[in-house]
Image 1 (cartoon, rainbow, N blue to C red):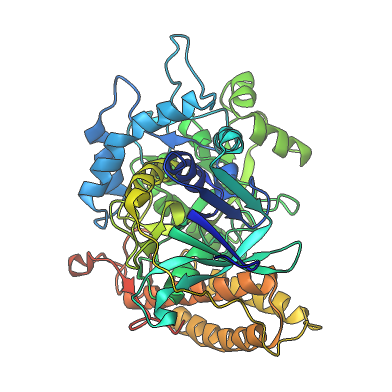
Image 2 (image 1 turned 120 degrees about the vertical axis):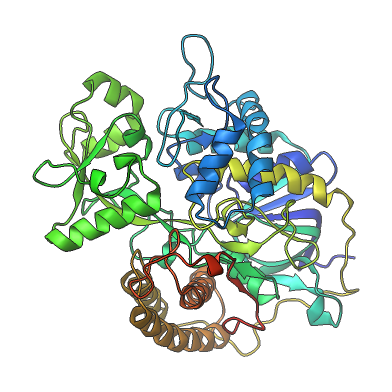
Length: 532
């Protein structure tokens, strides 16, 4: 029987982005679902996604074309069967999102008005203006709120996963310890299956397009209980984030370039023709490196995304969210070139999963950006992320249907021991800042052996400090996030050190060429990777 410090559910979902919400709606037909999200439900990478969701929805497109584009951008590390399955299943899920109330843009014939983004050879991005993620979140949350089998706990943050191995049993997960951020209490939520849908880790870098919640919690917690993670070195930097002191890394969607926007230097000259045949619509890794190179070469603060040669009304109407945000900063995107710089955007690696989202730990699933499924390989094709969320959300919902609860007879309540309330919170703030700054400088768009060794020395010292702080003081959301962030940083550094080549998003000055012998995943486990 559950105590006051223990709750039970069939499926525990950690995260409220597209993957977690879609899973919940699919799984609620055969079990009780509890969703925990550490701030408000809208605080997710999904809600911030502007461009759209990629799927074969046009008459001039084909499944094979989408597969080929994904494989090409993935630089030899995509799993073909995974790619083919996701691409094949994707269109039905996009149509289901429309049925749930997502008001995707339509043309005069009533068909999807499809956009084009970097790396795509066809228009296949279904969108709602330039706020697709928000529209999807809105529709999914409305459906979740109406479902009697779904409970959503906001302002709750997972502390650690519950593992049978800690009770002398097999390597299996049966839920998580969860902190109520408002009450300060910690409860064990026991579940037949635990689903990590907590998004990425963009906040490991000082410059990112991600919201504050993107601290790699799912990846860190999974690694700590023995799950494998892979390809953590492949961090995608979005080429175009608004450069302005008051913009707080506001994303400038790739769809602007898909509609004809041109990347230019301060003197007005285009430069992407020198880097890729698709020019400004090249893959994100190529465009981000090109911008980084031009900024370092010239010493300029930014490059510019120019829409001024396009019809002004079209530009403002097609991108109302971006136009309004830029307008508040004195930029008219139909008249003024937009200053942009790259920023950390998407984690292509994560928790190793099979075709249904099952991790290497029994009854622990990972879906969406938290996972490493083989879809993205060494570089993600634009707008395949939301697609992955719905496909694997649905697959995992079916896979958990017959899971059996594996749990101890009694779950140990969370104990703080001799920990006291902290009177030195500045330690957390300073360590948080230091991790993010040296990750940007040493483990960013361009890397080298020397930079990675510097980063390794620093992360080892910082993680030791963070561990001491974590056990000496009563925990709160800040120290939970910092602990996770530092572990994810360590995993990224360790993975990058192991890849002695340049491939996709991992570009190193010491190994400039791609090595066919290294066309394999970088897999880390507690027995082979950094200490948990």
